[in-house]
Amino acid sequence: MDLPLRASAARRTAQLVAFGVKAVPRFQGQTLPGRIALTIDPKFLSHSHDDSMRQTKSVLVTGTNGKTTTTAFVRSLLGADTLSNRGSNLPWGIASVLAASKISSRYAVFEVDEAYVPSVAKSLEPSVLVWLNMSRDQLDRNLEVRRLAARIGESASTIDTLVANASDPLIVANAAGFKRCLWVKGPAEWQGDAQSCPRCTGELTHARTWSCASCGLCEPSADYEVDEDGRLSKNGTQLGSMHPGLPGGFNLLNALLAAVAVAVVTEDAVEGVAARLSLSSGVEGRFATWWLTSLPAMPSLVTYLAKNPAGWHANLSIVDNSDCELVLGLNARVADGLDTSWIWDVEFERLARNPVIVTGERATDLALRLEVAGFEVIVEHSQLAALRLAANRLVSSGRSRIVYLGNYTAFRSLVAIRAEVGAIVALTAESAP
Image (cartoon, rainbow, N blue to C red; front, side, top):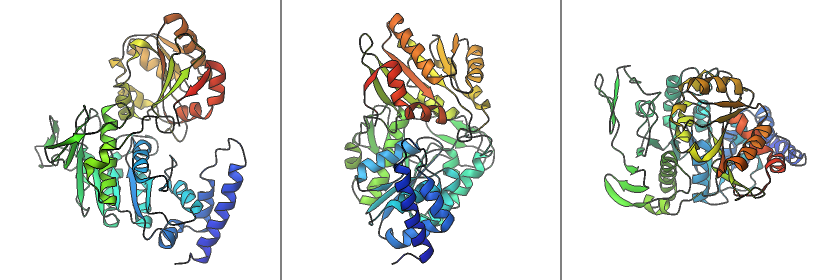
């Protein structure tokens, strides 16, 4: 089927813009081609689906935390020729990918911002929606996470199969309209956004599973489950094990959700898909290790991204700051959410009481939170200066690594300036992609 005239013009113009973007070193305009395509043809996603994606089996990945990592898991399993975005999860990011594609691909996987799932699903008619979790995020933009979850549930008629986290009450309460649901369970700690029932507002009880005594809403039986040691089971029967290569129970859950989604579109056995899954080199700088080769004993810099209370809770669970210099970064730009009050819900108290370096545009906010929690805090607003200080402290303390944990734009800024970081702390080898 040929593209309509407007869609064809949108694609050609977007491709020319993409060529120009690549010619400008370090220009942060990867989504510009998609923005232009959607300006010329607001139905560009639908027209692209009708033209070249009708035979493509597509997977959408959404949720507050873990979209980029889970999308990378899916992409690695489906193969290199899979259509996919890399972090740009708004419609113009997806449009940029579709505008650049020249041939029909067998598979596609796109991470999608929660607020845009209904419109993207309507346009692309995906085979599978992977729904990871729902929690507070960008408080000035998405004030009510329950309404956001309800909107995703309203997109059910355009999606063949839901693969979802059974431990999240907000997902379960809004999954009734999906034609087919496959429930997945994994190690989970965060319950800060699920204290009351999303159906009746009654109190939820959390034990091995969660339930509401008032209306009967409860955790569904998991079709697939992975425990903290990577043991995989189906309906309670042991299947084998999985080792995704990334730290934390939350990544075991993300990996299993990805494996189930891939098994659906490829019609393979979940255990076989899960067994070949590994992303040991990190994802877009997340969970990456950079080696400080010029310092004694060649210590490392490990980088983590966390955007909201649930994300910080998960990442702090895998940080042992007793043997590292800990650097925490906080910005409050539009992409982060301008409201930083959520940092008071993060359990920094679980960390060892060693000095912490805080950095970023809102370092002072973070310093106050940590001082209240009983930490000695060193404030350095420049991220490069903060890393220089941490590297100097490594030499004197004899610790083995620097751990950097930052929110969205702070983390992205750090990853984008690897050359400058390398000049300061001598990163001459690294495993980040």
